[in-house]
Image 1: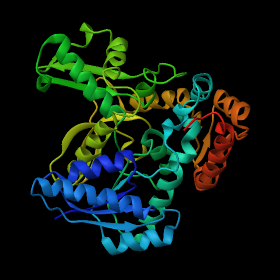
Image 2: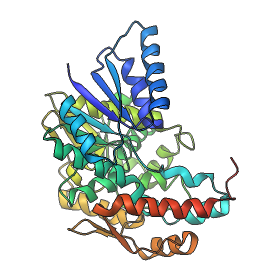
Image 3: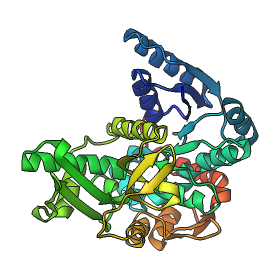
Image 4: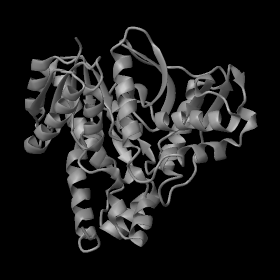
Length: 372
């Protein structure tokens, strides 16, 4: 039986756990989090829920602080997982939604890349621990993988793949096409190159439309020209409920990627950041890892350029070869004016320290503005 380590029992991590234990194919799970009391109760809830269906997966809990690379490395070395799923972040991307509307809209306009240090800090620590352990599992990263994985790649620590983002958009596009053309979803195939920005653009304040590539096939016939593709992507994303209810779909995306990476037979799907590339792509996933699965009318370089251009719209001007992440001027300006966070760039190696600085500035800013 395969063994999977799951780090982080927040919203997405808990969904993954609950869904997995109710699957008769569930691998052995080692669930890891820094908060022992809360996490053990969530594990208990999941295991008891599975028992209702007379399913009894092997699930254990380990208290882990990812900041401590040595301790995490020792645990990974001891457990020898086939695959690791990271759901740990220091601060969720949607925390600013709790602000009053005026402040939320202005701060949201800094784009999601503004918060990259808080998404990057713990997965950076985890990837250092994986390397130090000497174990070589596939790693699925759920933490803003469109941008965290490329940053980690610059320092030789890229996870295997991300989740969600392009995947949740592609599934919604297939659903919308099937409804518009009155055909089964099963006969709709989509090739989509798209960045996380196309997820937030229709849903969050202050975002701009970015480039993308899409091809729509119905029973192998190209029907792309039947659609205004800008409108198609917009309408598809708007099928989802507001706020974070969509995280159940993100959890499903993670689980599908997990099973694909444990399987010797390649599976076609969409996923962000294969081996550190920016943004999302059609891919083939298998036990051998991830491979791009682009159609003939778009090159790898063209696909990467689409997603690099979208990075600039999503708060990241560029990621330099030494792991330095450079903010665009508009992001720098908003963060400085609103939070007093005055950095033009930061390095991946400093992401934990910078994350705590950024989070501290936000905490001071939001004090008195958020009513709990």
